[in-house]
Image 1 (cartoon, helix red, strand yellow):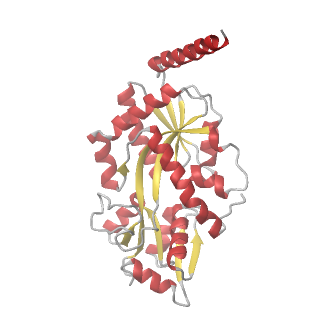
Image 2: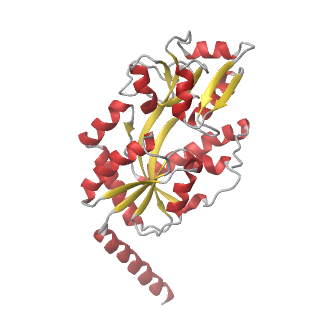
Image 3: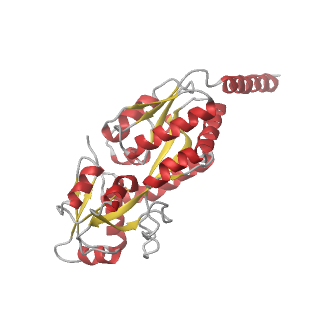
Length: 319
């Protein structure tokens, strides 16, 4: 009888979730972005939100909650009601903040992976008039007693990881100079205040096309549509220098699984539409559809890969 009662309870629970998912969404959905307007994640969130809204027949509102390397936005969603109406559009900080920051307001399991949205590969760039033309040129400069200057968007940012990956793979002297944002770090390269940086393709492509920056390599595992002539780090013989500015959707712990699956399906359908692809790919952003299991594996792989780099580089943010 006990097993029978347990079976009935489980069945009723599943039926309740299914009924809820079938009725969901009955009101507008909120996508919370942990960065300010205008950045890569904000752009991806807004484009995909429009596509998802068409798939679900319900409005998807994007709300910016920047601060503390996206922690404020993530914490807001982690502590929101798990009713299927508040989601977080996160980036690499979802993984690395837990490794780097001395304290966090939420736990790792408080956010559930829903689906990957897109990847904006990091592009290693130098100023247009620089003598640097390849990764080998960079490594030769790094081995010089003066070393090489590398601007980043702060501790634990994607550019910071690229610089540390270079140090681990080839060695040399790197003067890592943190700026408040990737855009500021990029301007420092254009004005020859620093030698190089590595920033999201969506950030640097306009400057590359405008003749102010020179693209040295893409840090993703394949060339990107918007820069087909730029070789990858792998093609230049350094596959270990591998990272991208990704965006993905997360839900508060406790959100019904049926809702997570339904939203994942809507995201994938939106990413495969010409309307979404034609707005993202010209800016160097590659749509990245996949199921929840694939996104969960991607996050686990990133954590296992980046964790040792954090420890070796002693990345710490005590704020």
